[in-house]
Length: 483
Image (cartoon, rainbow, N blue to C red; front, top):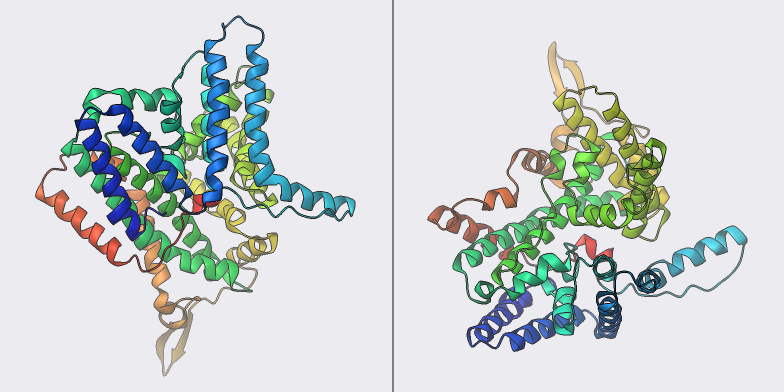
């Protein structure tokens, strides 16, 4: 079931919400949690009920391991092996489903073998609930959180607003909210704010991201050669598609959770306003960066073991980030690019040289845009095709200025007629408008931190929500469902 579908918006969400609040009002809190867990599992299994045993078995095993860690004395030497077993099981499950065919393909290629592929279907959300449960096990090992109630643990893992594509949450930041008495009753301000944020996210997905997707798909998948302007339009289309798609999903998740009086962590903070690659990763997919920092970078030694080791650790976490996103060398390359950029950024900081703000933004944004190309490309050939266009290797198709009858004649075939794969150059208009929006306009979190209970915000919410719903003509999955 998709957030951007009629059955979710008009049937599933209101029905789950009203039953949950009704049960809490009757002080049937345990039954309310059971209802929310069952509803979340129904939401998860909507795509394929065969996924359900996998997530259930994963939750049960991790709960038992976490319970063992929580009850074992911190000085007990058996705790670390238990943690290692838990991490290996989680990583092994993720590796089997997500990376088996990738490794088989590479073994066949490099060793001229003919091992048959497993052709496994990637279970929905496995990358997210795996990381979430690993963080829980590590927190339990560190005595930072304890959970002896399977119902609460199941709710922590399966809570449907954040289950499929994050944010990646911590047990200690989620479960106290479900226990709070005031969160068990309807909060009209949270409802208004939740609907506003959900509406913004739905509008981002339906009106913006899905439109950019048309041009990105045409350029990456259906066109053999791209000229200079075409290459830039295709790359920028995907740059804005993934931004408005993923930030739209996150807004919708935060908005839905607010209906239940649950505050999810912020996952986006205007990343295209970043003035450095480090700043970008403090703003983009914040909860993933938090996970990689707390559970990989710091255990590796962080910046405590000298400059050289720090640079290696920085590079490694971005290499892991790339591989986490997808089982392919293009994702590994994308992660490596960001790892190298972060190392360069770290070294630049030691020079104490201040860069002009506009220049810093320009370099950062264009690096991110160029790096998105292999992230999106299905093959290396697609990435090279787009880069070749961007660097003008296939021509420019610039407007021609000529003289006719003694007067300057501007031949505007490109500007007004040449369609750049698309009709009437609407892609250029979209890129210009929403490029400005992503850089200059307040994000949805900043936008919502005002008095929203007035006619202006109600009218704005009604307008964008109506527009988005009227344009739910076709279902399109969110990009991060693939990861």
